[in-house]
Length: 263
Image (cartoon, rainbow, N blue to C red):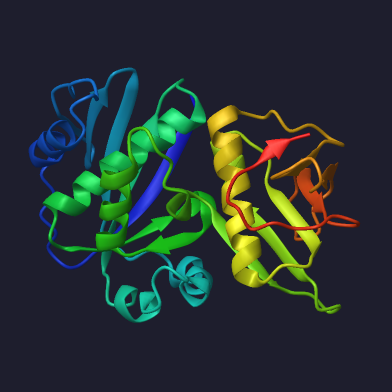
């Protein structure tokens, strides 16, 4: 059975209430199926939401700093992540298990974490392991409530890493799309700014999440028939063990509108 996991950093003596969490889920997202009765077993708390099992496990130790140090250093959503996460002493492992598609499973995991944030004042931060991202509790809750269940809070699910290469052109890659059932995206020759490339990657990821894996090897993408950025399925240039969708900007003009069409 597929599994999705997130980690919630906690201060000392956290107050975790399964009843409060399920009440918040129902109040915030009334379209969700009603949660089943809570079951406590072996230091875990679990309940079902439709076909999915949600399990909360309290760990009496911090998330290893070796897992958090890199994400804290590169977090653009949470500049003070390292300073604010270091004091945490315990953490909660939040697991969703189901045969639902990855996107549906990820949405429920996000909703469960958002309800933990709303009901546990000792929450310090969230570590989204599938994308190696750290997110502050207020930002996580705000994104989840505003965008779910119909939208996709991409900045919490996917890391968009961009920066200049040795030739001055912009490099970029995603981390987190694979956990959503799709290929990661990379480029090594974008003529855009860092912000422009991040916007483009986010728009393309949103397009794929909305439409599925419709972009094939050799297709071109762009905002018009004139803008043709070629997509090549290839080995990763940034250490990913799986094949990725590489954007090749050779000979392509670039636009700035955040929407896409496959040509």
